[in-house]
Length: 106
Image 1 (cartoon, rainbow, N blue to C red):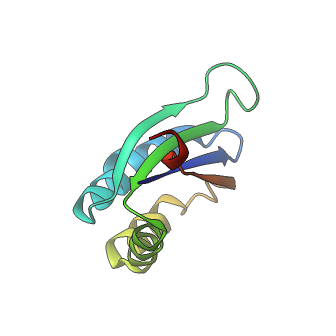
Image 2: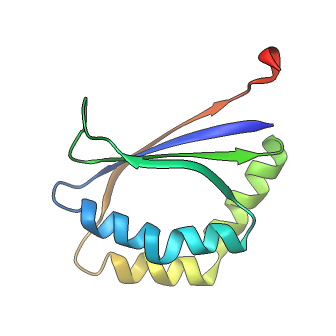
């Protein structure tokens, strides 16, 4: 089992658009594809507290993670949702990610 932490820094003022895209499109597509989100939040205190959305996903393996992300990126429903959500301009300024392996502590 591995976990992926993803941190999205939005273009200033675009957090509502990112939250809407996740709520209305991204999360349902993740669910359809068997991509498990274990935690999701906006940052309220600390760096990027006005512009950061953070979530954690759980995967069986690196191969599982790579395959699911590839399928997600190629998904026509995702591509259409992303394009529509960015009609007023880009939403995301930067994405950071980390992959965590709890194996040594299991």
